[in-house]
Image 1 (cartoon, rainbow, N blue to C red):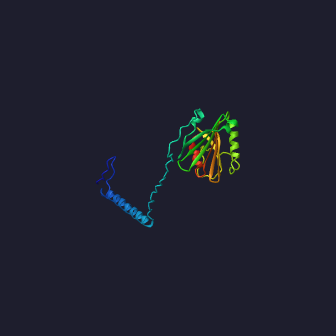
Image 2: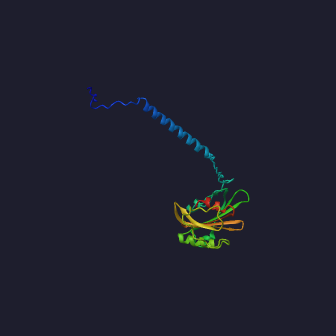
Image 3: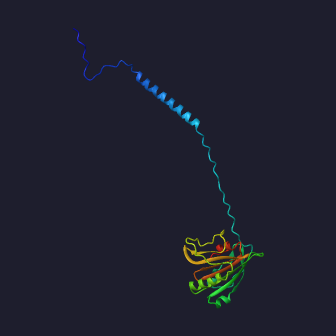
Length: 226
């Protein structure tokens, strides 16, 4: 009797499936799957709208140059520290004359001046500047000036977080804090009296009253610098 051969330990009978068949099947499945994915993506893209690129918009802001005087200011005759600190030009206006304000000194100011500035034509600006012994004295004098403005009306509370400059597009009258290095050193009030604008403000012990064209009064106040 012939006995069947016993397989050796550790080895399994060889498969009857050809060695190249399994890789071929795997490759076929991969190709088929790739084709299905391509068809799905193609069909899906065909039914969707192609997004239209949004054109970029460039916004250009044109800033007008700051007006400058057409003529040189006259020399200031006063030599005090306060008088020397007063501006001799404000936008297109230059100092034309300066005189002592005796009436304001008689009212208690340490010194006071009235400056006349001109643009070289018919445009004029008047600045009354005075120095007082204490901020309280200065505030009291400013309150009298504001009360004399016919169109000022009641003065509202200064808005918190003010930049110290008056908003150029705001209606008159308006008021706010005068800030120096972020600290409030006084208040301002700007009012209209027909074609004339008046700005009154304090800066510590100093009081200023600027009178000029109403359409320029806010810019003049912002440009004065004290």
